[in-house]
Length: 476
Ligand code: SF4
Image (cartoon, rainbow, N blue to C red; front, top):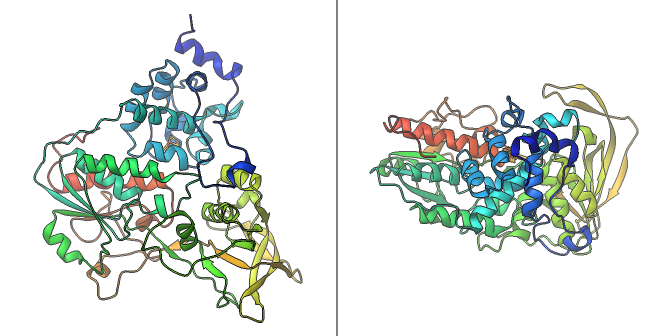
């Protein structure tokens, strides 16, 4: 007879090591764009969930931006009650099968797990993925259309924030229309996150679910250009703006006008999505030396996408060291395994072109780290006389993103913004325009999928309160 969950939890962590979900060998996975991880089997997921010690003050929940009820679904999973565990997981997250794949768990739930003080943390992300995939494959994800409440809400953008807000409001009976500028819904989940981290059919499955709940998707509509805010406010009772922040930060060094330089997002989109709106000149990396500027997750995605797209080499140039690099350690390790190179404490200062006007090399200076800056990270300083060159045929810029400005004449320009251009919001995620709400990257700047989910859940609640539905408990 198997031990009780309490017995398992009390001792399992010291007897069972943390397991990682199965990962395809690097040599195989660089040949395609399929996901690199698969799922635990049932016995492994139960054993891994039993490593959770059920601490009375669960730090993992504090580390998770959604305050997911992790110890409770760990206990259910350890008992083999996978559908019950998944239902609990869905009660606090609208995209658990997606967050479990793309969250940097080592900085969030798993980074906060109390077991870190003694051993390796519970494999929270992998368990979350298993139970939610199990629910999808065993008919455990309900498709219920709530009774209509007669109110209409427009959601602008179909990225993680837009999908979450639409989902929450549909559960409350709102008639929700999602406007998306691209012809494929999903926003950054399909355009920006490569399929080797999140296959497109996972996002499509979630969108289908929303459509079955009655959410309408209008694709290829550019709000601010094709549709005005005034028009939307006229037609809908409230508006949620989940437009993200996708304007690339500029490369401001001599030589930036050379050929062979591309921004990260168009490159990732071209290699990931077969969409008529992707457009732009094809960015060919076959047989080429690719240099990626930046040290975040987008830079890792570019390196790994370049290698899968036939690049001869892919090297990351980053001005701080590994300890101060913002990218996920898991993705860094995966990139290294796949053959990406990293040059830390390396700051590009100019680009050198060849006779045809194409980039041929990046002139860099060696950096050293000084005192921490306002963000707590140590500021890099150039080492005098340390210039060197890194040969490159293609340069990909992954320096981050700013909000995409609406046309000056557009009525969206009347929404108050902060100094970096993000929408200002109140405690209910409402902007300076009554009835217009926002969240995610368009408020915070470039951030995590899970933060967009958190904000959008808050905004949906804010919209529900604004429209007088506060007496009704939100659906779980
Ligand atoms: Fe961890 Fe992200 Fe899942 Fe929260 S949503 S439990 S942070 S993987």
